[in-house]
Every structure is written in structure tokens, then in C-alpha cells.
Image (tube, rainbow, N blue to C red; front, side, top):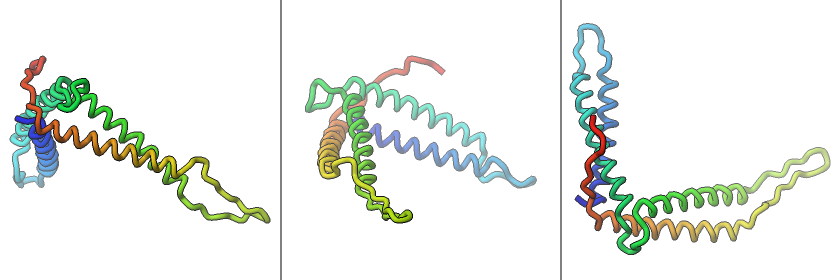
Length: 163
């Protein structure tokens, strides 16, 4: 199984778990004399199986990310590339928020005979160039990660604890 397939399976298991949770809540109480549409105990068993499968898959994905190198960069693991992408995204979001705050036009308020004026304290054009460069770097790194996910096989790891 390729890493990308495992990531899709993880998403599917999370979606299934959310559905099971909703079904459990919907069948937790019924009017006296009625039967639930689904048996909560059976649903709980399905939740247990799904959670166990999800946990095992997450461990395999995380260990693969920790050990596998980006195919185009023998020094950087997938985990390092994911962390780098996350940090780039954080920095990008901060810059975009700063640019938005600095670019917003303010109404002028007349207080008695003086007018309150606002001015920008940062160079918006320079910040926008930096944000654009970050966005490009994020896209390029994400593309590299996506390609790697379809090239790298999911590692076969045993969980080190028992239930």
C-alpha cells in the first residue's frame, strides 16, 4: 500500500467514526416502549474496531513519515517536510493577517476640531512580496510531498504495546 492510499484510508476511517458517533447519539435514547433503529452496543463494537484500525494506521503513517526520505532530497524526511510546510503556512497566515490589517481603510472621525488619521506602520508591498514567495514555497513543497506519498510504500510496523 502506498502512503497516499493510507492517508485516504485514514480519512475514510475518521469519516466512518464521525458517522458512528452520530448514529450512537441518535440511538442513545428512545421513547419508552420503542426500539432504537440500531443497537447501541453493536455500534459501540463497530466504534472499537474502527478506532483500533485507525490507531494502527496512524502509527504506520507516522513511522513511515519519520523514516522515509523525500525522493528528491535524501536528507529530508517526510516528517521534516510536513513540519516545514506547517511552519511556512503559519508564517504565511500571520503575514496575510498583517497585510489585511495594514491595508484596511479606516474612516476618519472628527473629534471636536481635530481629525483622527491612521497610517500604516509596515510596508505592505514588501510584505505582499514575502507572502507571495511563501505561498509559492508552500505549493512547491506540498507538490513534492504529494508526489512522495504516491511513491513511498507504507511501512509495516508492529505497535509496541498491547491492549
